[in-house]
Structure formats: structure tokens, C-alpha cells
Image (tube, rainbow over all chains, first blue to last red; front, side, top):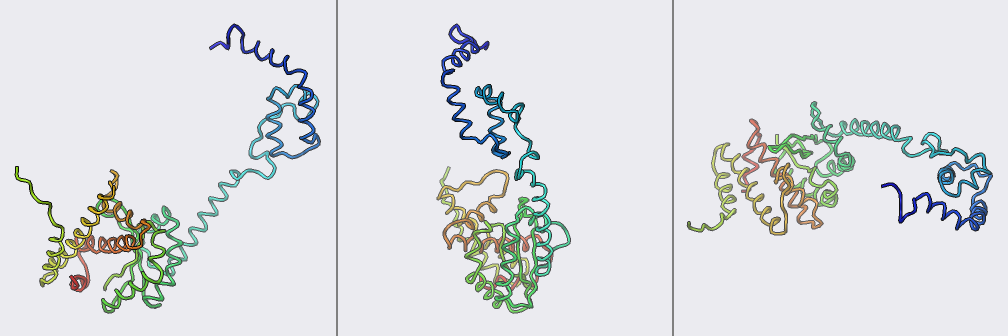
Length: 207
Length: 109
């Protein structure tokens, strides 16, 4: 495509348009300047406007008169005042990882976690479940008793899928464990289970 | 070819009941397994009747129970939770060499 449109090149059309709108251009630029303070030092979105002005058809009149517009380019994130959220992405990620690790450490105070990485990897992939477990702890103690030990397991099943099981290690009567689990379900878990989406459940393990 | 009636999954539950009454650990373990597959097949048929199809790449069991656990219906969520618990017991019964007090687990069958 050579830009030839109906016998006129794109350049011809552009020049024709410039000529046609020339009488209005100075008015438009005056209006444009009125809206944008010349002394403005706002970088963002001021920089956006500068970038636009530097590359637009109106830049001829405006940019020539304004030294600060000449050669304006889209600013790099590091050049923007106030920065971009992207500037802090690495910091945010590092903070998130640190917070997650601290929560997992806290979780170890309440749940037995296997020495292999199955549970910690699972929690890395399903961070919202970590919060649910922390919330569940109080309710588990209320139902099973504060001296009950709880263990987490996330073993692979036959198909290679993992579900996280939080088990009350129970040496007492079976019926007491079932009653405690029913109470836990009714008091708290059934109204929160949907948040886990089938990736977590609570049970008991007789010993 | 003679058209056969579909298998009634209730037969698995009855078998689970019979196995639970035996005095062998192998029977108790198998009882847990049959009870799980009874629940699984009934739940799967109900889900498929409502348009559920499993996606290749992950177990139908897992997908099915996640479907139930994410349902807006509290009864479906409850069923999903019961099934996940039974699935864990079934896997222990089928694969773990030690299953303490398994005979107690199957008593209610």
C-alpha cells in the first residue's frame, strides 16, 4: 500500500486538511492552551499530554512556543512523579512472600505439617486457604477441645490431584469425634466451605 | 444383543454393609471403598443429569466434588464435604498399610 487514495496521496490529503482547518487552528490552540496551564509542572498526566502534543498535528503551533514540550516522549515509569504501581511490583511481591511465610510459620504452631513440601507447596498455590485455616483453628478447638492435635496432609491421589485435609488426631471414642465434627460443620465450616472450593476439608483420624 | 438394565449403585451400599459385618480387616477396608463408590456414582449421575461433564486432565472425582463444594446449595456443599472425607478414608483403606481402628469406621454401615 503506497498511501495513494483516489489519486491523492495521504500526504496530499493531510496537506489539504491542514489548509482547510488552518483558520481554526490558532483558535483551537488558544483554547487548548487555556485548558492546560503553561506553567504546569504536573508530570502525570501532564506528561501524557506532552507526549500527545509532541506528536499531534497541533504540536506545530504549541510545541514551537513551548520549550518544555519539544522532544517530549512518553515517560518511563521511573520518570513519572509518584511512580507507577509497576515500579513497586517487586517490592509488593517480596512483601507478600514474606507475609505468606510468616503465616505458614504461625500455622505450624497450630497444625502439624509434614516435613516434605507437599503442604507448604499446596498453600503457596492456594494462599486463600491459609487464611481459612487460621480462622478455623479457634472453631476446631471449640469443638474438638484445645488439647487436640490437628495435622495437615496434602497427598497426591491416584489421578495426581491434591486436596488439603486438616485432621483432628483422635484417640477418644469415635462417636465423640463425629459429634465434634458435626458441631464444627454446623457452627462454622458449612458457612465457609464454599470459599475453599473443594480444595480443603476437615476430618478426624482415629489413633 | 440383549439390553441390560443399568446397574443399581445401591448394590454397592448393600455390599459395603455386608462387608462391614465381617470380621476381617480386608472386608472393612473394602467396605469403605464400596461405600465411597456408591456415593460417587449416585452424585455423578445427578451431576451429569444437570449438565456436568468432566474436563480431561484431572480426575473426574476431584472435579465432581469441587462442583458440589462450590454449589450455592448448602446441602450440595455438605454432600461435597462428606464425600471428600469419605474419599480420604477410601484412599487410606486402599493404599495405606496401617489404618488404625478401621473396624470402628465401618460399624455404622
